[in-house]
Each structure stands twice: as structure tokens, then as C-alpha cells.
Figure (cartoon, rainbow, N blue to C red):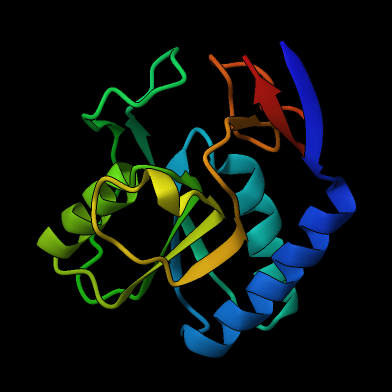
Length: 173
């Protein structure tokens, strides 16, 4: 497998600070940040620290969803593997994912939170691939928009590998 660096560490760090500043202007200081696992964990950790620096004191929860398994193509069906604990009724939520590809994971999580009477739900993804969208949705906050290429690193996996990379790489099959 050949890779090339698409976004280096410094570029990602700068963009997260910019995102945090934009988010801080639009969400309440006590927003509940819900990360979609596994992919969002690196991004979410850096984002909540940047939000703190921007004056936001978020609470953090995680929801674990699966739609890819070990492949490079979405199975087209989202499965809830682990849910957030507690009540979200009336709570403002920032839903965070590593990548918005088909849009199915974010749409699924948003619908689930709405069924539970969550307050306003804002969405954020580090990487957006709008050309792959299968579910109509618009993101509120986006780190980087890319074409239809497969990427890994910075929490994003390729067959459950490469999440540990401190940068994002384009993967050539």
C-alpha cells in the first residue's frame, strides 16, 4: 500500500484551532460533545482542548457506530455498537465525526439524538467528502473538504490500521 501525506500535523492543528473558534461563537459554553467512535477519538481530543482554549467547557460522550467493517467501501448500513449514557433531552449537542463520506453515520446519530429530544444539534467532521454523499445532509463545521480519495491517519483507519499516524495520508490501493 502506497501513501502520501495529504495534511501534516501542523496543518491539522491550525485547522482545529480555527474550527474551535468558529464553534465557540455558535454553541453554548456547556455544549455536550458527542464523538462517533472509533474514528473521531484523536480529532475529538484535540478539538475539546481547542474549545476549552476558546472559552467553551464541553462535556464529552461517545457513541460507537459501524458501517465499514474491514473494507474500504461502506456496507451501507449503520449499526449502533455502543450508546451514550444518560439523558440528552434539551441538551445542545455538537456531534463530531472523523469523516463525512456517505453521510449515513452522522444522519443516523442525528436522528437517534432527535428521537431523544436533544436540543439543537450541530455537526462537525474533520474531513468531508461531499462527492460520496448518499444521504442528504449539510455539516455545520468542516475541517477539510477532499475529493473521492481514500485516506487514513489521525484516527481514520484503513482496515483498522493507521489510526495512530499523526497526519492524514492518501492511500493508494
